[in-house]
Length: 178
Image 1: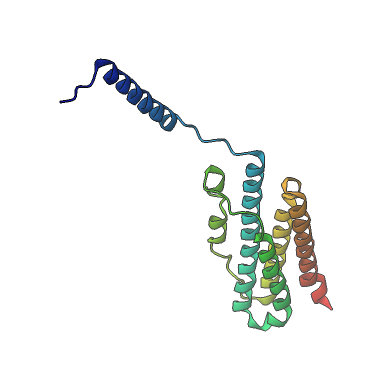
Image 2: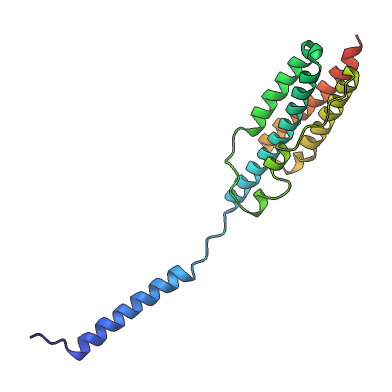
């Protein structure tokens, strides 16, 4: 029969306790590393991209609603709608999806904006086009408002899309008078 000496038993017990405490301490009190500046910037850009694309999708939905209500306007509106669809795609490309967290959720989330019901379309085609003009201007204003907070490359894209929105508004008003 083998007996374990008192010293060996105490040493083994002390080593086991130390290992257990070290495991509890490192796992139980571990704090996640705060995100780096690059990670925060990437998340902010991804959120901005998602919001900008959602704003564009709202405008695209408005075009679809007007075209559904007034098919006779298709020749005039289809090219502008195609341009808006291309802008939505460009605005949403690049970057990484926003990580779930307090800044990516809430009432101003892209999902909440995109799921809102489109405004009713007036029965009068001229009034429907006037509503599109207002929507184009509002969308351009929204894109312009975030230029100063956008990274340089994305700011240039937003500026181009905002300028195109202003051109669309012109074409829908002044351009339609010819």
